[in-house]
Amino acid sequence: MGGKRQHRRRVLESCVTGARDLAYRSGNSVALKSFYRDWRIMWELQKQIRIYIAAKRPDDRAHWADSLVLDGFDVTAFASADDLWNRFQARPARIVMTERRFEFGLSGLDLVNHVRSRQPWPYVYVVVMSSMNRMEEIEQGLEAGVDDYLLKPFNPVQLRARALVGLRWLSYLDSLQEGEAATGQGS
Image 1 (cartoon, helix red, strand yellow):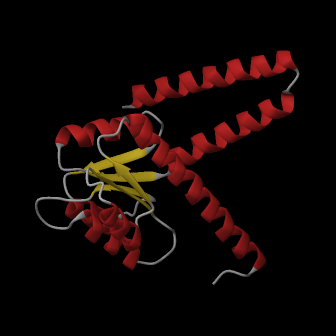
Image 2: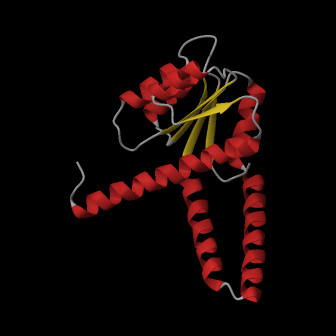
């Protein structure tokens, strides 16, 4: 996995270098500086964010985890919601992605309830992945505390996009929490 991460970083850095050169030639240095700063911040955040994935099928677990590892995330995949919950209690993640249904043990929504019942901070971003697309089932998941719903089948780009949305949301919430702590307004 380390080689894939290094390759991905080299590709991203070459893209940034190309964008920097293009912006320099066009005279748009302000936009370039902002882009480069934001890219570096997101890259550093991704390395710090732990993602847990629970999926029934081994090939789904491997495929989804590999997809996120290539983007620099720290990913651990589990065969069940029970396995994920057991690890989560000992070492929480900031993003949890789970299938909705498992053959045995906790369901994805049970897992969401467990995650939401613990201390509210730091916030955990939860994505449920399911082939069930009936509106009442999606509403039930959102009411249970799911942040995002990803309908199967999906491609790795969609999965990474959801992880990046979660990353931005967590970054925003963390900055609010830090601001409240700095001003003494936190609870």
